[in-house]
Length: 491
Image 1 (cartoon, rainbow, N blue to C red):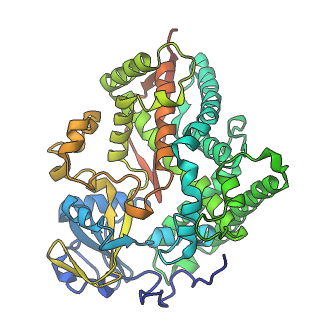
Image 2 (cartoon, helix red, strand yellow):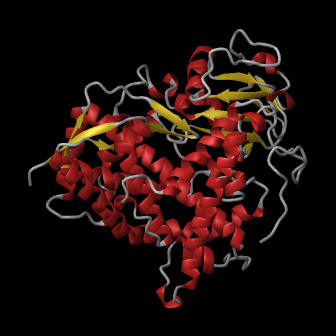
Image 3 (cartoon, rainbow, N blue to C red):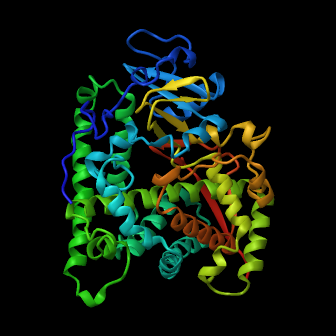
């Protein structure tokens, strides 16, 4: 379904009168004076003293802790309102008042992902069309069909880790989790094998993806007028990265189109190519199919690899939690060589440990919301229609009002049923919120819980005693330099 779109950053109107592109806070918040900002603001430049362009989210966390549950930052004429307080975030989650806003970092991905599910503007019709066509691909029946392929990929990981354990070598956790999750989404969703575990280096698709994400992050923090000059070489590299992503996906789609129809798999790619909208009969255009495949391959593995890496870090660093999780795996899965689909959901404590890692380091660390009509946030801050705020998920997940007096501590029992019931709504948002929340969240949670169970049953995890968690930002979050030693368990 073809449509015209304005380029990112244009100021033209959307249907309904909302402007498109980046909108600085002064355009939508009439009483910015009520919202604190960092001290030592410099005219024209803004709040850049002491800022680290490599870690803007973690910088914003530090500022938010000092300034409170709503604050603002300005750099080179771009001002953003940040929210992390539980009460304010709950208001922003109200779908009757607010909707997803395609924020600056996400908009920077539109040259490659276009109107894919993650990067589409709310008015673009392909979002609803693709969502309705693809949602059945994440049903319980579909998930059960993906389970054997997830086990196959996990078997490749454990073969690699068995060799490392036998040789006494530490494993590169983020690197191996990236290989695992890329192969999982590519095989289950698109029938494609990247051969990640046969490679000494990351697949070029991963290199191009990381380059594109990192480039979008850099564009966030540079002055708009200087970005084309400062990033001239990087722009060429980014163009090459996007071209590689496009050509790789075009090859995957072409191979499927050329396959015998009798070999239909019923996976996400089959749905994109063969299924019409149940109500309108519309189909996804070839261009949109490419954008959706890129969206799923990137978002479907990058965030899950980070979630698994953070969870393994915390499990290795907390032997008491690890022992309790392992006891659950041994008890629930018993002597079965591989768990059945239904057994994964029974790992309730393992899932709590995963959720707690996602609480502390949600790999998608923020989401943006825009006002559907003139409103007042928190009874204090007027917002015009189209005004937006960036919800800092990492600080929302650390708000003592919701999480108690020691929110920095790793404690999976925060997700025991009674504890969950005692908390306010809308305080745990690792997958975003509302109608535009991640369509693949159940896929990611099943995959991650399965993999953690398999690894805990098979290995003792030995952390490097000198390691201190450092987090790298490339729109998503990942622990940097995390390596673990492995000891095969008996039996």
